[in-house]
Image (cartoon, rainbow, N blue to C red; front, side, top):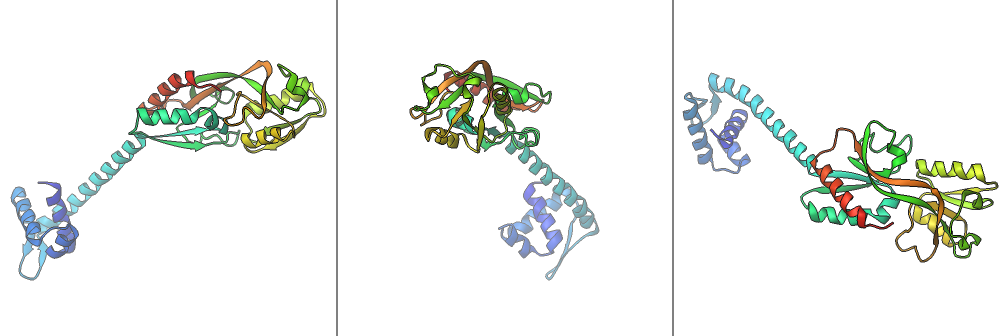
Length: 294
């Protein structure tokens, strides 16, 4: 008994036509007849009444067809579920914020594709806020973010990848450009350009500046590259948790901001949901991040 015989039998039980079964299964009528004859021989009882004009099920054949259809459908469902699990196990969805994609993610992506070409790495840009958490809503399997978002959340696990200090990004013509370090109080009277990601570190920085300064204006920009563009136009200063943005480092200055404040880039995932693909990606990140400068 094989799958072709089972399909021939179920199709014939449904259509009552050898020609219809042959057409649907891309077989000759004689092949269909041969398959069913051997199927009946293996079972030891006839499944059909045959004459020159019609094919009908025997009582035993009708009972067998009803039960076999249930089993066959369950078998097909099991195959599909198993195939879906396999496909999911070969895909990793990774979220990243804009600064990560600019500074380190391309190198990580290329290296992972070389090491694990059979794995599909799906990259998803994300925005993180109290009402929009891609990990919690299972939009992504893993996510590059900062420790301030995950370190106090018992539902997440993470590895630390890179610690960085903050930098104040200023135009060459800004009076702050002569400083070797910028403190929050130095920003009095300035326009500070911040991104609208609603990241925790942005809120912490704003709170710190407001406690130390007066007459500070904030200009919210959606993307970090746009913020840099405003700095290049000498429309204000900005603050970032990394030193360079590709293609911009010669146009603006990155001056250390409040050296006491640090931030750590992490790779996070939901607790208890780390599979083998995720482990491989973690291992790559731990190795390659040592050589990436930002």
